Length: 326
Image (cartoon, rainbow, N blue to C red; front, side, top):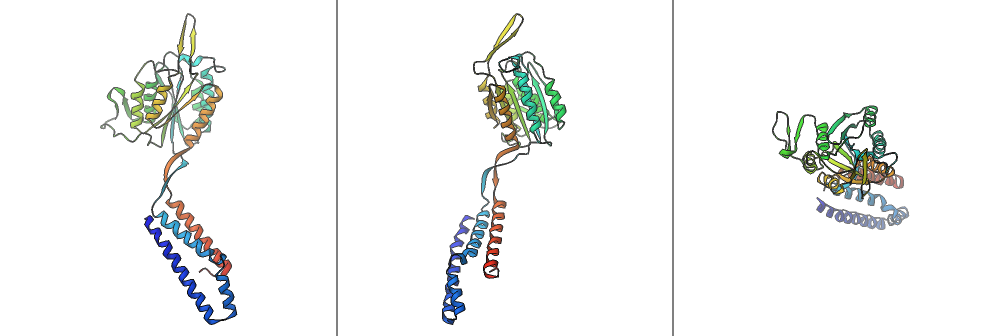
C-alpha cells in the first residue's frame, strides 16, 4: 500500500499545471483585478490549503498500509495475585522493623494503588503455599489478609506459583510432574505464547531459595503455557542474612538467578530491593507496569484522525483566505 504514495507527486504536478493555466488566462484578460489575484497566487500562503490537503491525502495513504508501533497503552489486567514469602528469614531485622513488616506495608500500598475493577488475591508461602484470600475487589479484605500473614519454616516457591495459578484459573488442575495443566473434564489445554495473557498477572516476592516442594522452574513453565507473566521481587542483601531462635540459627541467601529465570521464562520482570524504601519503589514501578504496558499497536485509526484534522484545517484556511472551500 505504501506504493500508493507515488500518487502524491502526480497530484502536486496536476495542481501546478492547473495553476499555470490559470495564470496564463489571467495574463490574457489583462484586468487589474485579475493581475492582483495572479500576484497573490504566487505567494506561499496561498498554497497552504492545498499543501495541507496533500498532507492529509498522504496520511490516508500511509494509514492504508496499517502501520504499527510499540506504544504504552492501558493494560487490561483483571486479576493480580500477590505471592508473599513468609519463611522465617522474613523475620530478619536488617530492614526496620523486619522484612515481613516492610513487605506487608509495601504490598498494601500496591493494592491501594490498583484500579477498582482489578481483582487481587494473596498467596502466602513457606514450607507450603496457602491461598490467604481469593481474588476479590474488596480492598479492605485484601489488606486484612496481608496483615494476618505470619512466618513459618522453609520456602516453597514452586508451590507458591502453582497455588497462584489455581487462584487465577479455579477450574484447572496443575501438576508439575506431568509438565502441563489439565482442565476438569477436558483434554489437556493447548499452550499459548508466554506473556500473552493480558488479563492476569502474578507478583512473587521472596528473600530466600526454593527449599521444598515442586521445582520452581517447572511451575514457571506452566505459567508460561498459560501466558501468565510472573513479576519476581527479590528482597534482601546479596550476602544474605542469618536468622534463628533459641538453640538454632540458619543463614539464608537470596536466589536471584532463580527469580530472574522465572521472570524471563514467563516474559515478566525481575526487580530487586534491599531496603524498605527500595521495596516501596519496586511496588510503585510494578503499579505503573500493570496500569500501562508496552504493546504493538496498529496506528491506522490515529493516522486517519490526523488526516481528517489536517483536511479540516485546510478547508478552514481556504475559507478564511478565499471565502470558499476549494
